[in-house]
Image (cartoon, rainbow, N blue to C red; front, side, top):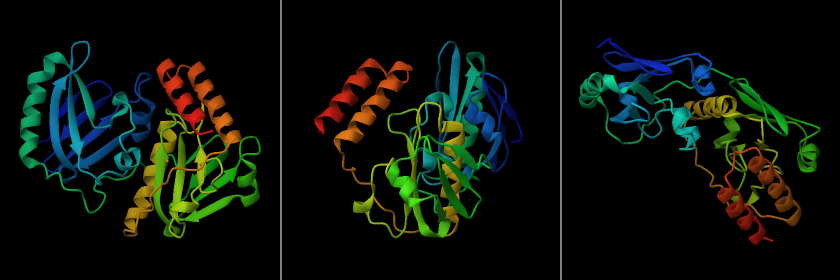
Length: 283
C-alpha cells in the first residue's frame, strides 16, 4: 500500500507485507514510544485490527499481535497501560473514515490467531541496562549481569555476590511492571526448581523495582531483549512461578513500600486498603 496514516504520537506506514510504525519523540509522547523509535511489524505477526471510539473527539485504530509474535508484548503480559500500548494509534475523529478504509484493507491480509512459533517482530535495541532499587542490570546479548547496590540489596543477595546469567542457562523472564506493587524482573534459571524460588528481594536471580527505579521504558525493553535471545536459541520447558513464602519482617517492609506508592499517588485508596489487608492476612 505504501500510504501513511499519522496520529497522535505515531504514524503508520502501510506496506505490502508489513506496517512500519514510527513513534514521535515529542515531550508529550510516552517514554516507551520514544525508546522504541520505530518498529516494522510483519502482517504475519498480526491476527486482527479494530477501530473504536476514543476520548475527546478521537478514534483508536489498534492492531492485535499474535501470541508469541512480539517479545515486547510477550514480556509485558498485558501489564501496559492503554496509553503506552505500541499497537494503538489515536487519531482525530474526522479521520475515522480513512482509518476504517485501512482497517478493511488490512483484515484480509492478516494471519490467524494461532500462537507464533517464533518472534516475528524484532526486540527493541535498547536500553540494555537499567537501575533497579537493589542492583544495576546489564545485558550484552549473551549474559545478564546483576551488580548489587549497597544501599538497597538484601543480605541474601550480598552473600550470593554479583550475578551473571548466560542466556543458555535461562528458561524464561518474569517482568512485573514497576507501576504496580511488588514490581520486579526475575530470571528463571533452567536448573532451578519451582519450590526454590524466593521472594524477589531475596532471590539473586531477581531485581526489584520501586519508586523511580526500573521504569517501564527501561526495564521492559530490557526484558524483551533477554526474552528474544532466549527464544532465538530454541524452546525450553517453562518453570512456573509459585506463591512465595512470607515472613513478618518481609510483610512489614512491603506494607511500608505500599504506603510509599500510596503517598505518591500510584496506588488508590481502595487498592492500598485491599493489598494491605491481603498482606496482614498472611501473618
